[in-house]
Length: 191
Image (cartoon, rainbow, N blue to C red; front, side, top):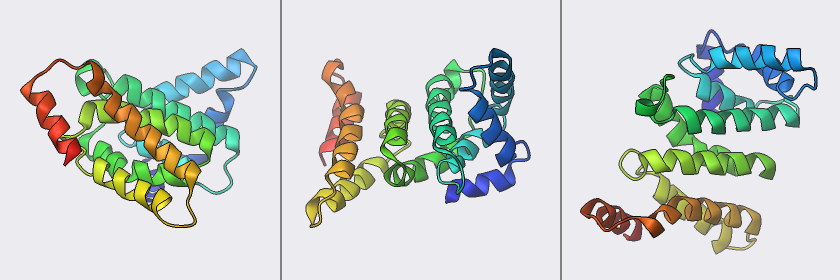
């Protein structure tokens, strides 16, 4: 629900317009799709675009295809713009922190189809921010996985999804060259 507050703060993020544009991205009419994509291209430059899009994922009354489009938009936004040095669009550090603080919790309450997109987004963000700027990720992942699989009734779907996130985060260590930085990260992960 922390993401819902972003919709109220961001002047450009009219929830109805954002929802409408996301819905139009899957419209078979090429003109409608292009107009929506042009609006979204401008929208992603607003300070809290990332949190506004994530807020739609838990908003009441949003159709599943809009939520799916929002998740895809967010994942692509992370892929193209999370790394400030490689992007012309800047996601502010305060917004990044809000996303890091709430993304795993959001992941746990959305449907599986949206979890797939958020899982990839978590992996992308972790590739840039873990462990230096996202130290809370691993403890939260371990705690949530333990809660899902540790006591009855076991939630195997949630547990599997959390383990897949862990896998996507840690697979980068397979092909890394030996370095002090790598050993420091591995030591952190193992502790």
